[in-house]
Image (cartoon, rainbow, N blue to C red; front, side):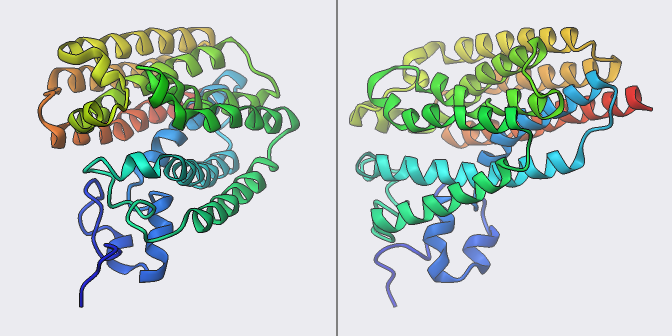
Length: 313
């Protein structure tokens, strides 16, 4: 029996043999793919600045990291990353149909309608709202503040050569929220951590955009990978260097201990390895390097958690 819409066909950048393509009910697969649940790297990259900020704030306050907050951030990141990708796919469905890597996504492939995708988007937003309401008032208002950036992002690739910067403003927002959840306000370390996460996002998403650079040139989609061109290694390296300097500022102003700085050093070393490994013509390697940022971020988080625990003990 043929599968004209491709519901049974895994997407090109999905993890081989992932649970969604193997076990999820067939009728659910288009919606789960809208939320990118078979590609968890996205919610990890949204989650990590939240966790960094929460752990850095706990250390600064002399407290153990709040496990309940970490869990809420995890659930919220999964829900809001899914909402963001569903919204992005609704906006970009015509462009996605013209790019090899994205033309089999649920909307351009005809697996769901735009109306069905919008209903799914609303459900995810309601889940995200429920999570947000568990925090203090200042953090709730801060969470709402990210919505305008999220709404604007899908249109940026049409009008600016640096849409990755706008993505960074959205994806790094947790760098403010984790701190606010502890202190009820945003202080210098959080602003510096947020800025570091913004520039980190520009770097890793430039690597990601290398996969589509040829199709993007034909279709007219703008990206930092196209902007940097043959200097992409230097461009990503510059972004990562700035991110590390801003991170050092956050650690210094939060008076982080030795293990926090060690986590930052390991994070920086991982980013340097990525820059050294970049091959602009190798899309599969670009995807591997992009995904490795989860591990880089978790190494930094581990250092901040240990630092907080030691300072609270």
